[in-house]
Image 1 (cartoon, rainbow, N blue to C red):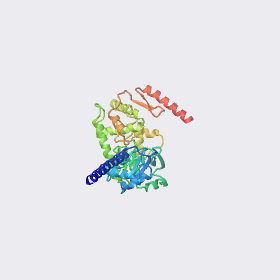
Image 2: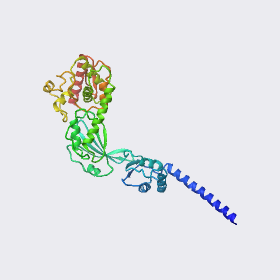
Image 3: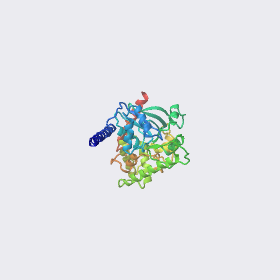
Image 4: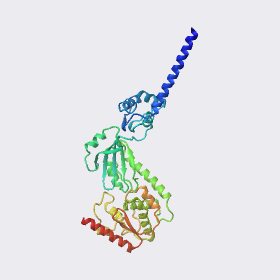
Length: 384
């Protein structure tokens, strides 16, 4: 009898072991198999949350088939205590394993609300936008100029959300005065900037910030990035350039930046100025004259007057020889690279061609023909 009982117990243990192994294998397959989610969702993980709360939220949204397996899988992968706060775009069919990896990896949130403060050459603008999980496209909620307009309700409401993300984007060609004015007007930042950095020493780029970030520290970050870019560009410069220092390179890069917004033209524009410097010709570029009038404080908003083209200022390159004494804006990396590696041409003239780009010329006669074409285009536009 005891032998029979022992045999039956052993049988039960073996069957139980196989069942346990089967359950584990089934759970592992459920953890890694494609999930039931049919439409993308934005999963918000609050600060101080845990895998239990997240699993219940995912179950309610139909993103996981079994919250217990989700929690056990996170425990088994030793990721249960690595949960990160934020908003995460969970795509259709995402497995539990993929979702756990996504919400424990960290880094920038992939959905939710983002406020972008764009510091542009003509305007500073705050844009509130939110990702629509169904289309994976951002939908604009509000937009305004924080330097001159009151904040709309769509902005103030999203500013109150704890998981709203913030980004400050400096456009290429903005002046240091414009950057300081904009940063002091952006209410998500703290502190006050009282001293304007040297012209050209702020790197145009996109900067992630958090609510309460210090303005002076952010400005220092922009300067540090620009210093690294200047050093890298100067290190890679071509031989024989008419530039005696990184400072002169920065001045030339700022002129290139203001002369063209067409990326493919930067090397040609750079070649014109390098050729003029090598031949002892005056640069004769309007943006430098404009800087002499405005000192970088905003946009001129009109054409240059003949008196301004003849006036004697340190930045009037129709009057002075060589480069002006300082940059006229903050150039981006592409303009720095163009300044130290211009395209090899014999061009010494260029004028707008009506398409947003320029027509380049080697001789004055050719240039005059290009100017005549441009004036015809201008006349046609005025008559239409």
